Length: 345
Image (cartoon, rainbow, N blue to C red; front, side):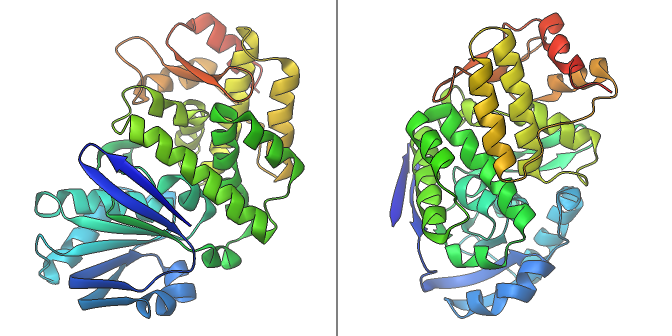
């Protein structure tokens, strides 16, 4: 299956199938991590034909998604004498994809890159849409660029070696898509187990179609695309507070979705029953739905580092029931903190 994404200055295919033969008449650098390299690098190398192929392996984990790792990738590119026609290939999960895309966006002021995502989270969300970047002490993805890949190749085979916890983290992003945009898809998720191979492929395809539709309308996140950050405003604070080494990104998003739902219930745009349906679906895949907030005021202040916020207003993405959502900056501090206090300990 192929999904095309068309943007004002870019168009590319998202291929969902066995990894095709990739033929490139240039130098190529594959960016990956030790885990993926040990499991699948030989397979990927067998599918790539290029003038010259080299591999740079960076440390595995969200805690290494910072500028020093970008420097390591760039140093490898310079040592390999890449030029502006050269191509980077992101071979890994969302962390590898974000860093490879960012490195590509700044190497010699921008070169092309290809995504070969290996986790469910990156296959259904992170690899599509051209968001790249790294974290710093102030928060997640606060340094980066919009830089679209020239193609995305999603091979479900890579999921056969994915740990259960990583798979579940990806499911959180799938549920996010359904809650925001498609009640029929959400109902299908309630009725089907996406750990079954055929259902996995259906869920990937539906999520990619949804993401491509949203990005096609709003590439630079000026409006609609911000809705894809449902759960992220809260989840990013959870990740930052726990130094990116307690929760996987999708797990933090799951917690953030529950918090956002509670806020939506409090302001009257989501029913208690609808919020429970979302929580139940998350828990079906062992995605965490609780969190201990030690300092509510400090947690709230972290919202101001969110990229969607402007000046003294915080933008929240809140579900309107299931299948729709809204972006609002009209939630008072008092209301938001009242919800946060229900998670305090």
